[in-house]
Length: 388
Ligand SMILES: C[S@@+](CC[C@H](N)C(=O)[O-])C[C@H]1O[C@@H](n2cnc3c(N)ncnc32)[C@H](O)[C@@H]1O
Image (cartoon, rainbow, N blue to C red; front, side, top):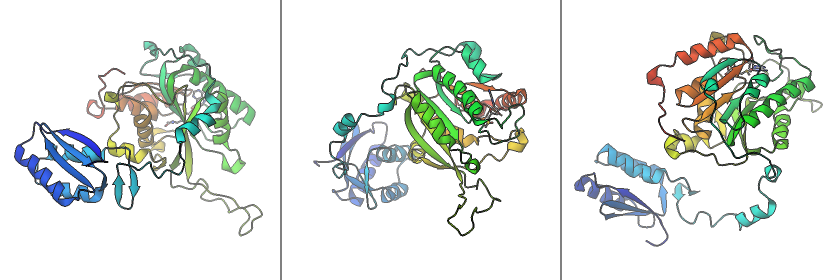
């Protein structure tokens, strides 16, 4: 076969009979214009051009071979991340030919990729977090506490700041004058950027205050851009709940001033200095299925249902944190949440084999966070034993 993608599967540990059955079945079920398997001991050579993955899966499901060979052979093709789609088939070759924009790389160069962040002064010298801050929940004002950390010692920050909506927090006053609010918030975020490693990620969940027409996601994003952080992504967190169930429609049936309703929040992802994060692939804990599904940047996740139980009015659901950490960080990385609340970020960091530092101004919330972390059973925790 000329123009095809070739993958090799080492089958030296499998029986000759099942290898032959696999090859003959696939070659009978699929035409040469789709794929061919060739036995070249110790490998099977998979030559693939295009494939209906639903049919491919069905053929594998009916194959009478060991589960381990089935899994390895299926994943070899299913895990290929670069392909185009035409009709029902994945196309593994030539899928770039139809791109609308020719010479993309050269044009990117001419335009200047993330031009707003290119002349930053970030140091590339990363360091490890001092031991007194590692795996700790600390009750403090983040503006003060973060000043005690060295530059470039945190791999990833995931947080949701208080939004100044007037929520009933334990200690924090959630109704400040907007100038004072942003001055404090940006003071804390500036410290966060300082302590973030070169190549580290700053992931912020933001909900605009629609009722007061405050586009907090734009104001905060503008701050990050001024700080020369690279905008990597914006995830739409679809919560499927109205932000304003009971409120009116504004000007009912009139264009005078209709009131818009929203069921989502934003998650903005920024990188310090480099889009690529240092780390070894052996410390990546995201599965192929998770990766394929989560890179589609609209995440449908229900809001946290246990806020009353934990006594906090604005918590993350754990599966939101798990997605962020597995998609944007490695096991063993240091995770910071400077507005840690009841500790969801740090709980998930520990459960997934990452190190953590959680800071909150309320001692009550910090106690809750400690209790949740202590309650993680040994069996529930991923063990990290690699080096990043
Ligand atoms: C939106 S909540 C975060 C909730 C958290 N994501 C969770 O899952 O529990 C914001 C938190 O910021 C805390 N906070 C407000 N000002 C702070 C400050 N200056 N330093 C540290 N924490 C602060 C509040 O006590 C509150 O718990």
